[in-house]
Amino acid sequence: MGVIVQYHGEVAEVTLDWPDVRNALGPGEGRELRLTLEKVTTNEDVGAIVLSSSGKAFCAGGNLPEIVRLAEGGPSAVRETIYGEFQGVFRALRESPVPVLTAVDGAAVGFGCDLALVGNVTFVGERGWLAQGWIKAGLIPATGGTHYVISRAGEQAMWRLLASERVDGPTAERWGLAISCTHARETALNMANTLAGLPRSPLKALKQLAAQRDPSVHLEAALAYQVGFITDPGFAARANALINR
Image (cartoon, rainbow, N blue to C red; front, side, top):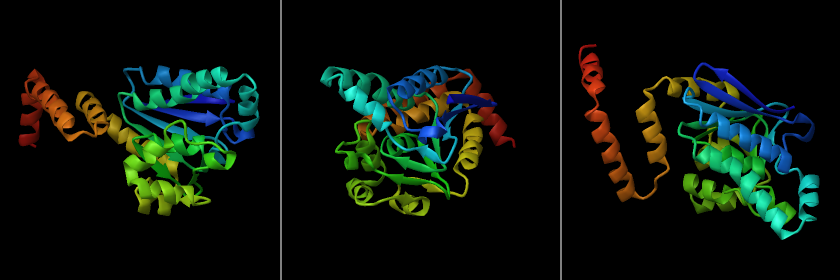
């Protein structure tokens, strides 16, 4: 049990595999996932990443008994662990140079909901659902969930999610949070395979541009990328191949 990494050609699949705790994460699990993601996201042979799970849940949230034990260490220990291990997982995913797709084929609650929504594309299968979860334990989404929801679907979606016991795939799609499908893992792997087969440099450029919300900064960065791509010696050959198809 732990984190399983499988390579499907140029696609890296990272699978949460703690089924006995429904893939809930404590500090140890967070560290293992962070270290795995940091390794996978720096692999130059990888063109796309799929985050999936084994068992009945995508991720049932934080491992509460472990979090309670962490709290006994005081504010400094809690701060260090949240920043280093839990937020570290999300930094690795956000900073990935290639697209990250998350496949939700079970419950994604609290930490798991944040993990589902940090991906560039989120698929929710017929067995999958999202729930904010944190507030029932008197907590907030300290790994960025509020930001991810608002960025995708606006502030109203944040409050709707907070007021819902669970949000299934079709509802998540209507709200603009995810793409509903039958089998999330299969669908995510299919898209990841297509994306990984695209020219790598512009794919990475689009990954960076997608994270830039300021229009002026976005256009400036896009200009710099495009000048480099058009003046690249290989561009003329690729353009002529398309013209002569």
